[in-house]
Length: 288
Image (cartoon, rainbow, N blue to C red; front, top):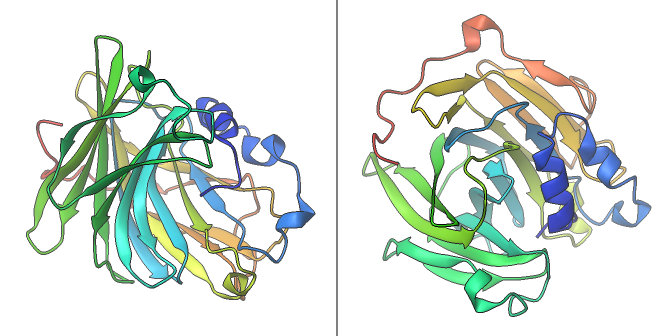
């Protein structure tokens, strides 16, 4: 899905995304110009913990769009609009840097520990390999959706669960739990991004825009901490029709179409004003 390799993702996220490594990890690549909208990201500096809560309000979408809401050094979780217009929630965990999904030894692959009956699970390759899941979600623009990724560590394996606040039922649902051999005991390098994965040249003419947050991270001790800062970065695509700004209590990302960079330059760290840092929601699941 992504122009960056898994190794680059891990290098970037392990450093907290805060040093502008999106741009240093892959210098300007003219081959990407006019093929796809530039991928744009929010890196939440120095944030790490055992659960990551975030929200997404898609403003403008198009076929071939991924709004990654909860990303970290081992995977990502968000919503997609597919090329045929279908919409879903996508949750992926890496297990190997090899692009062949059959290359990793079976014992080292992602295992499915829990799956909601409405979810489809499969292996993926092409950007490293691992396990991914798909949940049908008829999301709409200008509506806010809420997400959590939580983790535990036991017997040399890290287990990651994705949670969705289902809009109609108004309940938190654990969709999938994936586990993978790992020494990780916390989620690091937290990020969000907007991506055009259709990449057919025509896709560059459509704007993709979304607002993220309020977001929070939970420590191993169980305390939730609001994320009030985010760094704006982009991938190696050299085009400049990208932008980011703070809108009320949210961080906004925009790319493609007629977007102009009129608010914040790349690598700018945005800080929410004190008045925009909202309280942690009281309805978050007590057991993650």
